[in-house]
Length: 157
Image (cartoon, rainbow, N blue to C red):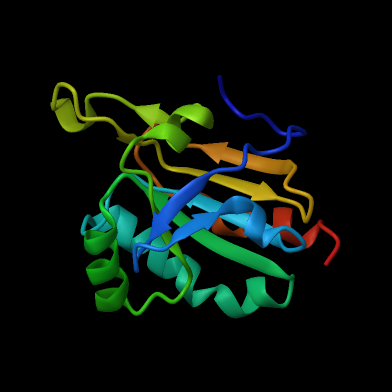
């Protein structure tokens, strides 16, 4: 079942790039931008995550924490984050539990039967973990970055 605007985001635990287990609830008290993407080392995903990286100073002034989530393993995400000089956390949903919880699993990615990844999606959560804005790609493409920032800007700091 999909997570909708107005609902509390389900708490989850995923490994970060250092294989440390991180919980969504540890970011309570901050606005959170969850950016789900299909895979590291791909063109559009790299462009999206680097665009968000380049906007981090704006998100920081809004008391917002950026978190990237994909199904890639932690060691892959670590290499990719280092290569692209991205400092915000990347979390590995290698079991596909969170993409299923959020209703954004994309089965048979690229025509590969049985390979499920994350549909490119952005969820903006308030300081209490309630979804206040979401965007889920129905076709290839990137989110409207101005809309993401505007959604975060509407939230109390």
